[in-house]
Every structure is written in C-alpha cells, then in structure tokens.
Image (cartoon, rainbow, N blue to C red; front, side, top):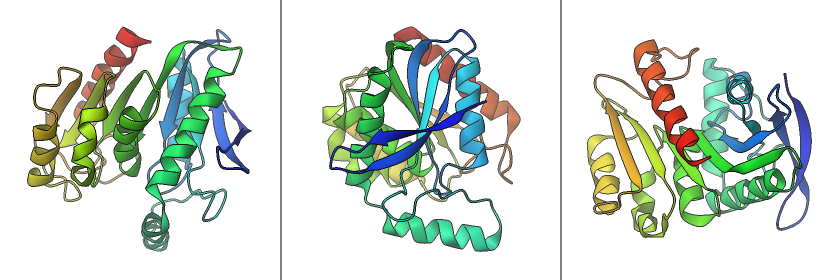
Amino acid sequence: MGEYVSVTARDGGTFQAYLAKPASGSGPGMVVIQEIFGVSDYVRRTADRYAREGFVAMAPDLFWRIEPGIDLGYSPEEWQRAFQLFGQFDVDRGIEDIAATIDALRARDDVSGGVGAVGFCLGGKLAYLTAARTDVDVAVSYYGVGMDAHADEAANVTVPLMFHQAELDEYAPAESRAALQAAFAGNDLATFYLYPGQQHAFAREEGENYDQASADLAYQRTMEHFRAVL
C-alpha cells in the first residue's frame, strides 16, 4: 500500500524510504526502523500496519551508505549477508539519517500530531538512541541489541520510551538488560516489559521465534503508548 520517496541526508546525498499513508489521508508521523535485513517485506508490512492504524509511516533505508536497496530474506546466505552489513553499519550516521527522516515527516502536509519511532533488533537499539539524540516525540524499542554499550545516553532521554525485551534473547542477555534498566533508574519516562520464555524477534511472523500471544500483547502496549502521546 506504500511507495518509495527520497529523503535528503543531513550531510549530503539522498536515500530512499518506504512511505505508507493512512486511508484518512493524514495523521501523526511514524519512523519504522529496520532490522539487519534492510527495508524488507516484513518492514514494509509493518509500515503498512501502522498506516492502517492512522499513522503516516516511513521506513528509511539505513544501509544506503553501504549498499542502497538492501531487502533480504532469511536464508542462511541472507543471514550471513545481513550480519556483514551489521558489522559495516555506522550507528552515528544511522541516527543522523533517522533524524533526517523525522525532518521529512514533519515537513509533510499530511503529518500532524507529532512523530514517533519504532524499531526492531538493530532498529530496537536505534529507536532508543533516537529518543536520546533526536527531537522525536515518543519511541518504542523491540528487542534492541547492544543497548547497554550506550547506557550512558539514558540521561539524555526526555520523551516517553518503551522497551519490549525477551527473557531468553541470546543477543540481549540478562546482564545487558539489567545494565540498561539500571541506567534508567528514577526516569519515569522509560517503561520496560519483559516477555517470559521468549527469544529474540518474537514479534516477527516469519521467524522461528515468533509467538503470537507475546507479539499481540507488545503491539497492544505499543499502540497505547503511541496514542497517549501522538
């Protein structure tokens, strides 16, 4: 239900973003932040889902500086390529590109009521850093990886931020989650939800770790979180 549009990067050049608009024609903005597989079919369908909820959703191609148009599936070869891209990815540049996407949404005539961000896996970490470094109004992180390495940035978060974390996540173990949560001690803007017995990517339908009950509960909480702000 969407189309690709161009976004101007803050340091020059342009990149593509998948844009999905609600049937009403307008609504709050939503940045949908990719996994390590690029702007995949799953990411596009997620943007479509947010559009059906009334958001103007935009999923930026954050790997464009490495190779534009990455759209991977889940075969062993594609997993290997995804991890190569993950290793090459510049997080700081990625956050700047998310900030440019927020700028692009705010400049649209069909966006009103603020801009949120939601991310998954790599995007889960980036959603956290988006809340810490940009002017986004609200954010949600799904099973973010490596967030404890940026725990010191928790002090910069001044907008509502929700974390969905899996108890058995091999990419975000208990000690990593505890370090991040400790960094947010006393910050009422941060909400943490732990999903017992679940593993990484429990909300992705195509994944072997998908759990519908947990995914539905996380989505319900996410929608309430966004609607309260946007």
